[in-house]
Amino acid sequence: MKSKLWIIFTLVVITCMVLVSCAPKATPPPEATKAPEVAAAPTEEPATAAPTAIPTVEVPAGATKVTIFVGMGTGTNAEQIPLEKAVEKEFNDTHTDIKIEFLIVDYEERLTKFSTMLAGDMAPDILLPIGVGGIAEFIDEWADLTPYIERDKYDMTRFIGKTVELHQYPGKGTLGLPLCVYPSVVYYNSDIFDAAGVEYPPHQWGAKYSDGSEWNLDKLVEISKKLTIDTSGNNADSPAFDINNIKQFGWNGWDWYTLGEYAQQFGPDPGTIVSADYKRVMLTDPTYMDAMTFTKKAVWDYHIQANTTQHGAFDDKAGDPMGSGMVGMWQVESWMGYAYDSWSQSFNWDVAADPVVSGQKLISPTDADTFVIPKSSKHKDQAWEVIKWLFQKDMMKKLTDIYSCIPADKELAAGWKDEQAKKYPNVDFQVFIDALDYSDVAPNHEAWRPVYTKINDVVQKAFDLVMTGENLDVVAVMNDAQKESQALLDEYWKNK
Image (cartoon, rainbow, N blue to C red):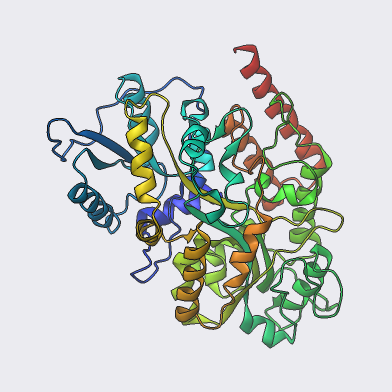
């Protein structure tokens, strides 16, 4: 199976990221929140590289230049750079004591460039935007903003849902203010539901399904079977259903199959795959075993979800599973906004609340972007002043428009909802806003852990064994992944 990462980067190469002001293309942006899947662990030795971009902003005598490193996620696309530079100019035209410069770094070079700057005692003053996963890359490098927040009595109540908690780290304090949020929801193809005569999933979080039963995975499986159709028109409930010739699937799982991201919905363990003390891998704990078991059943027993081979048909038709028109439901974060225009041209769609795993906590796995100030910045005080300026409502609106995200500010989020509703009047965007009360925090599924990338690779390999059908013994697959991951973790601590 193609990994989520492979899909994202392949699409990024062939298409551009979408801004609010232009029509979305079929490619997800390289969000900062996705970075850990390719990044080296922060403990690895930094590579050397040439210095970053040549400075272009002149600083008069007596003024301080604050450098803003852009490259840990979105913000590097050709359409975005002029807009960021316009923000830069607006600041510089209105300030004499501080000047700012957006230093744009290619996404693929972000780790090398930032490591080089740190090693050369040339740390940037701000990194923006950056997600939880991006923060994890260099977890010990960031300054705690709590003293600034308390000194200035900064209003943290302006931010929506649990977004403040997303950037609070035990023992490290508050590392950023909420900027962008990307909650997960269930996207569904209304036309597919209508054709099957199936009621839509509930839009209110924690609400019952239309028949009064709990909106949970059991109900999801039940209706997904009715939405899954073979080439003869039989659904997955029919004795005549042909599992070898399925043309439409009721369910496409979670995101692009990051196990930790959705496993946390199956139990009390967070999606970090390791214990709170970072010493034990938890892949054989019920949370992760149950998640993988459900995926195996959804694909190979219920036949409501495409296996690796079948999934190729989605890629042949569109840049994402939903866009193929062959999927009834898909749970994924709101950064799918890049695809809304293309979806709307092909079918009617809407969004619903995530289902709960019976007996477990209702969670909306959430990606989030913020900024950080490196401890080694020589201008931390000035950087904080720049951040306060950027987080004024009018400036924050400009930034979140550039980055095509839901603003974390309550007022701006409400405005975002209204703007989206005008563009897509048949979609209930309140679902996204309400999802932010159910975000996964403390820790978020992308929070740092040792040997992040290597463990991710092991888990992806295990997932691929199940999705391809090469090994459907989930217990054996997860036991092998547990042993391999634990060995990596033990080696990490042995060398500390």
